[in-house]
Image (cartoon, rainbow, N blue to C red):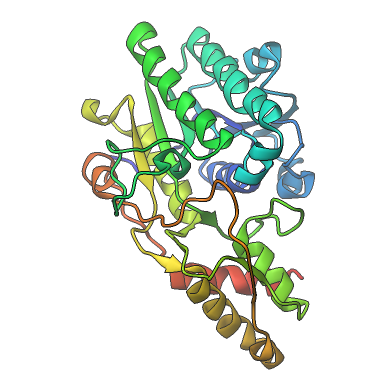
Length: 327
């Protein structure tokens, strides 16, 4: 089976975001025509600036909450890689209505437009947040708990809609439950910034990063190249058993926030030894956060032939180097 999409017309929703822009870049280097749909609420023009003169790249500034924008975006498309969503557990707790409108109404618009356009496959970003309060480790796709945040609810509803659309309309879908994706170009700014870019930026500025809780919370951090890989495997698989289901996307490694901070300090000290003198500040735990996150990736290995190419330590080293060079 080919592991890269080539000679195809592909829609990447949220294509100016962190994950979306990495997908766009990879797909354009593989001789594809790529359409990016983004409303730039969280996406950034600079993430796709290098492609604006590429005749094989089309930017549609639109909103998945608008069905007409979705219909326009899927015209002539073979694959949809649906990354557009309003992320962040804390943001969803503060403003559940806006999160719902993007992640549920927007998802329904997008999958309906894809169905109407008879796209070959609809691959969408699911989330490890659906595991909720289920205590078991590692996390297996068929065992989830109760959602702990409005964001988690919306991502679970996406999975339910995808299954219903597959069963009722025959559209081929695959959901990818991302576990804490990180890498170059991830946004370090704002109240809802992901922990890795935020900590790197703070440490470069000689600021103490703030850890929510004692620092024993653990995550299965996943380097962006692995996400780019599995999106393409999901789009291309010819294994009938692999369709219309969901997969964990991770490295199957656990890293605590304390361990993460120590690794980042060590890597950044290669560029600035003064960073070794910085110690994190510990605050209260956040509402809605899952305590531990550790994925089984056996299902993805078996059915999609997925194997993470870059594990956590190597990915963190690459990420730190990129942020240092682009500070």
